[in-house]
Every structure is written in structure tokens, then in C-alpha cells.
Length: 103
Image 1 (cartoon, rainbow, N blue to C red):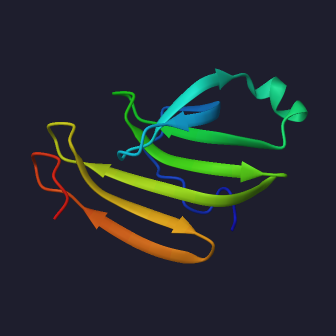
Image 2 (tube, helix red, strand yellow):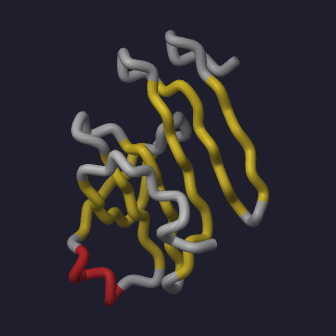
């Protein structure tokens, strides 16, 4: 998977994290790390965020390769509208209503 292939054009910031917590979407990335510290890590999460600090793209990077990725799109009210998840060459889309409930 090309790490730059699916990056949305409205990205404001790119940040790096050790892990995530919870099971709800969008993933909640935790333990932010600096880009300089990536040379000491085999696995990390790269998050791309918009101006409202909503995560638009999350990539799990293992040994320099993107292993999985989540793309997120939101309603105007900030609620997650859909998630496009790619893992092990398997792609699935999950849709949500304006209350954030899976449909």
C-alpha cells in the first residue's frame, strides 16, 4: 500500500502516535510521539487531521510499510458519516447516520 496514495487534500496536520484506545470509530490515537522518534519504532500510527482536529486518515505503519488504514468523512455537525477501512487488502465501508449510529 502506498503511504501517500490516499491522503485527503484538506489535511492541516500530520501527527504520530504509539497506539489507539477503544473500539469506536474514529479510532482514538494515544501517546503522541515526535517524527524524530520514529527511527526508534517498528510500529506506529500516523494520523492526518483537518482544521477542526478531526482525523481524516489513520495509517498503521509497521517496518515502514502501511499495514492498514482508515479514512473518515464527517457530517457538517462533526459526527462520523462513513469510514473506509483497508486491512490485509480487504476493504470495507461502514456508514453512520447523523446521530453517529451505524446504518
